[in-house]
Length: 516
Image (cartoon, rainbow, N blue to C red; front, side):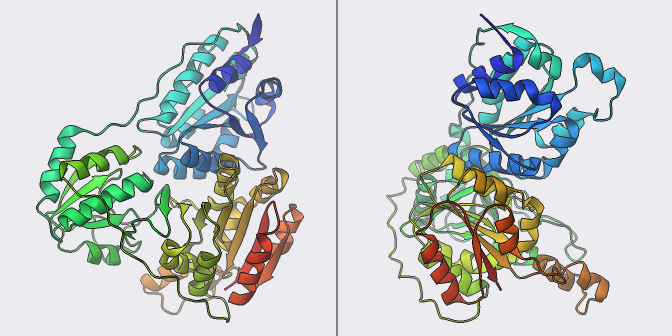
């Protein structure tokens, strides 16, 4: 029995556990579209912008540990998705990109959409291949799924000439390729144990990667045993948090605050991350390094790998006793009044359903959630790992499709939300259970803060115009309704609480514009 390259490759992906494809196809992907029609077991999700497809695949990978496919049109279509693939790379998210290209014999014609796709893909991919035939395509698909799954996990990109997709092939699946799995490195565990056994505030532990209960409890055991200081990486791919779970402070975003937090540190163990650096270079700092001079960094688990095995082995090596959770009091009550970042975060924390997924792209408006979220019901939080804004709505799409039994709550800054607004349409089309809370301060507030930090205490009309989102004001309720998502606008904390309670009774997506 025969088939074509696209179908054989998709059958190979499905056999390896792939069940979802986020797509924005074009002419060079028509054979993939037909194959997706014929193959049962791979869900096809149309995204109206490639950045939505890649951001959705990012969250899907974070929540399941398995890669989804993206289906993207040539170099320009792939380029539209690069920003969220940058975030996915920084998260170590497993993704397999299918990037259609011209038929191999048509490339020499230099048609209008011809581009150097390898050069576009290489900065955000840890594995790239361009198979030249249908059999090679299926074999490359098996390798791509394994490469994306890790360890380390990450982005794999398949650049597929159209003739490799349409060419006839025997329906004989290639042998599966095993993905590498993370195991604890005994030498690193021993070195970290000797370091942390010194105890006291001169030694520290920085937690990165996907952090689930087992990893957090191991870190808490290590802290209880040694008295070391423990921080979370500033923006984590996935964090389990809420009542009854170990809580650690994140490393501050602004470098001066981070350096103050790290002061006095002599040794730092790195679990699933690298030594911390400032997000940007500032004239006042002279260096982007955040660790104190002379502080030695010891790797326990590499970035984009599971830090859990190393942390659990380290706790055992230190003979750390079981974690004893300290009792935490209830959340403070919410006061009625105009919304600000503090009472918005507290209101959401009171309402948050059990086992929710919180996608946090609230930026400066998320400060209240950062304080009170750890007192909410147990949940998972996805953060902006690479700093490329426009991740929030796409991540909500991917998280809801990955975990249909879990409510998804998106805390979305208004400025960054406009980058991938089209994702609201996919929320509506797929009837996804997502509550979007737009934190509408009508400004790029972080840029206004950076203006202040650069010495512009009284910015002029040009600087103000480039950091302000008013005149005209964005009307998020009407924008959402235009894409099929109902919504409302609130200005007070009691209005937000009431809107959230009413929303709990309604299935499907819903948007709340919270004026701050």
